[in-house]
Image (cartoon, rainbow, N blue to C red; front, side, top):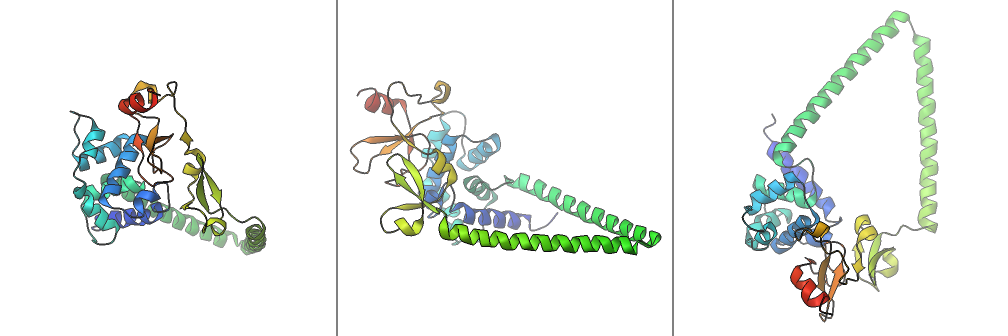
Length: 289
């Protein structure tokens, strides 16, 4: 086994973080303070996580089954996430494996946790070695066949076909690049998104950068994240389970009322982390109207 496997895991998670900064949770990861990292943990917890990720959260936050796990994360000492924050900000170069596992959850790096990364790495190495050996065997067998049959002409024909295929690919590539240029000039890509009333819209950055607050484009948020209207007939929890909310809320920009959304994340206008709906909020601010 490679002695640097921990370093490999660290490098892989950090590389994935650089991509994740422009992803679904860029609002939490662009400036990964301990508080924002904890908020992201809560958002992921609300969205629902698999058994392995739950084990990672249990281990890091020292969660138990005696009380509500979400409450335990909320009450967790935020300063204990500072080593992760410092690592992501390049203030430190090393950190514990338990921290790396939590980071892997936050940036959606796979395979995780560390023990699974090790196993996966060994499998990849064995597969690569097997492929190389098999390829070498095939090449050797092919050479022997050509030598025995004196098939010089046949090989020449194959070589000619290969050259023609390369030429075809090059022609297609040139036309593809020309087509891309035409598309870019006449049908510019919409490379960011802005909030419009109750949903996000994709737009061209250069056209709105001076007039609107723009966000990196995120297809999942663009397609699914919506502000919703709630009433006494709204389904607030999945199958009536209070631990699985279907609605999240946050204060409006003027702080005069609550606004409701169909997914966790950040309030599109205030940037504050949305909270999962609760029986208290439903009773006081929705049913009382």
